[in-house]
Image 1: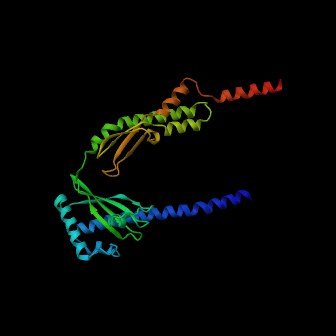
Image 2: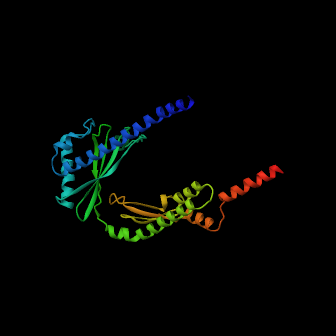
Image 3: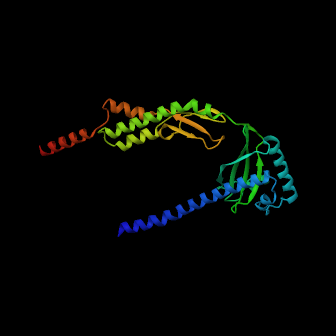
Length: 275
């Protein structure tokens, strides 16, 4: 009876959390699609479509001014990239905490709960840039602007050649130590496995757009991390497999307590009690 009550309690607690998470993800996915389509229609000169997606409740917005702003952004894109442009969403983040300021623009962007911030990448064969958009609860556009920077597309081959060999070696070593733990007779194997999986630091990484970086306390899982989703976020990283080194050294030198040791201690305790 008690276990059934606990199960009901867990269902009541976690069901709203799961549903809220699914709803948030769906809302962010819709915001991404809206942002990409908005930028694409604007650059193609189909202004009626993006105009219909703007939040016109903002007092400072005037239709002619908005169209003029669209013309400026469109001219910038066509002069820098030409007419063959590729569009890609770089994701959205939802504003949860309010940030009140005296700046009117910042107030518009961050003063309303549920505001989503989205990035859209535009590129040709040689360059790319970023559009930044903010959307309200109903996914209506609150603001849009384009980065002042036009970035050259980096060479991905160099990106992978630098770190892929080291990443594979570290990952292979961690897997090797996990297998050694599994085949050994040490106690509390789960604790040793957690050390191997998570204790990989300090970390050296390489970001496609920014070059090398170093951090002391990041803990990449299994010693490696990478992303090739887009130019801004593409990176690889690897950490010193500190946990695997310590565990492997202690297993190799028989410094861990084993199941045989436990059996010996139990038998010795039984003999002392019988005496």
